[in-house]
Length: 177
Image (cartoon, rainbow, N blue to C red; front, side, top):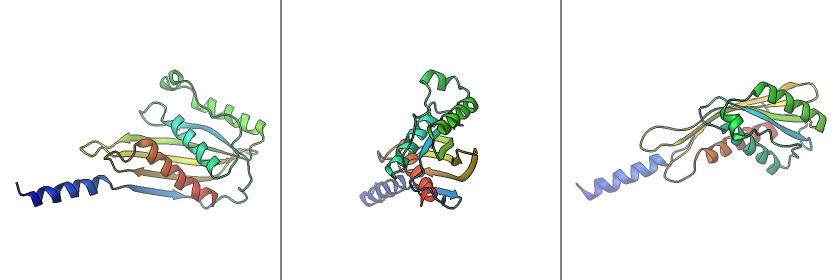
């Protein structure tokens, strides 16, 4: 085999492995969200990956806090056993919304994780898709929503958590600014 062909082939594989893509669609930014207090509601897990929803909720809470938004209460994370058995997302969501109201939160962030996996094949890129929505806690109305999907390069450049973090940051950036 020609050494030039090997170098070109390795370069091509490395460049393709580093590709990342993201698709985001959202409503316009929220009005009057600066200084507002936030809560994080349970995320729905529409994937076959256990605890993907809890991971996404934790990343979202951290992202809100890093943006200077105060997050009240505790993250609504079940034990691993409860999550594996399915739990009762609707009840948990309603309970968390009631608690957010009692804690005095202005907005609550919720969402659904629709994909949290790796593409099949030699590069096995991480793939994440989710929907986020913001609820006006006082009247239980969705006032903002966004949906997105992202995939990231392989070759040790991060997994689903890193891809999810970039996606959540991009979605929340559109909600907050």
